[in-house]
Length: 84
Image (cartoon, rainbow, N blue to C red; front, top):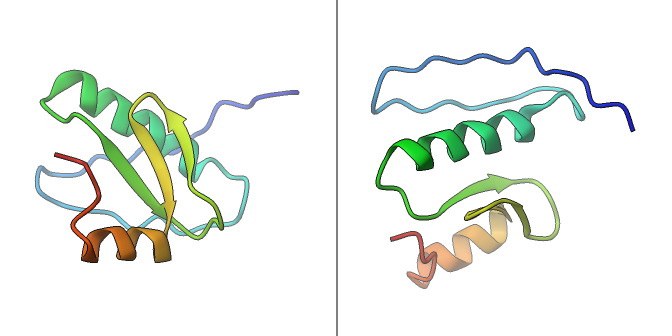
C-alpha cells in the first residue's frame, strides 16, 4: 500500500475550533489524529475523541478514538465520554 504525505496544515489560535470538510480519502482523519496525538504529548490531555460520520467507533492511535456522531451524543447525554 502506498502512503502519500498529506499537505493539510492548520494553525489555530488557542481556544479556537475547526470544521474539516472535504472529499473522502484526502487525509482529514489522518491529520486530526496526528494533531491530537501531538497535543496530548505536549499537554495534560489524557484521552480524546473525534466525532465522525463513520458507522462504528474505532481506535485511531493511543488514547484517541473516532466516535460516530450518534454514539458521541448518547455518551455526552449520559455523561459517559470518559475524557477526563
